Amino acid sequence: QVQLVESGGGLVQAGGSLRLSCAASGVTFSNYAMGWFRQAPGKEREFVATIPWRGRSTRYADSVKGRFIISRDNAKNTVHLQMNSLKPEDTAVYYCAAAYMSTGKYDFWGQGTQVAVSS
Image (cartoon, rainbow, N blue to C red; front, side, top):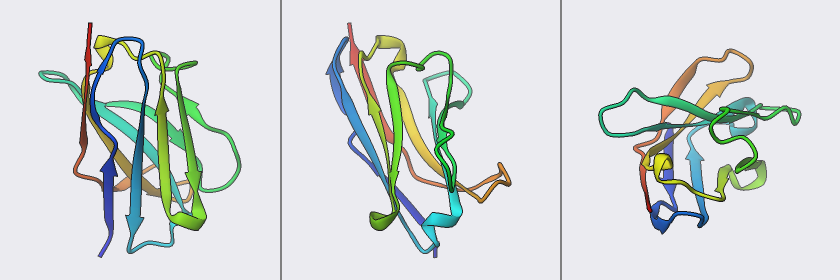
């Protein structure tokens, strides 16, 4: 059974930092591209960042580029999202997701972790 479990969310002041983690189980983690998405109240879920199953070609939404960093540790089956210079508009539930190799189709999703940024 595939499980993705996010952690690290919380309340932070604008300008602060948080580090989200997502622990995967039930999959061969190194075969999966990993992504972070977010959904703010009343808005559609949106893409935040992705890291491929191999190689280093990370990709970011324009709104977080230069502030967020996605990384993975295949030995620990974990993907991280380092979020710096947080803004109130970053407030959302953050989800990690897994896509098999280069399919681009995210088949597995975590339950989400809440991030709230106060002004």
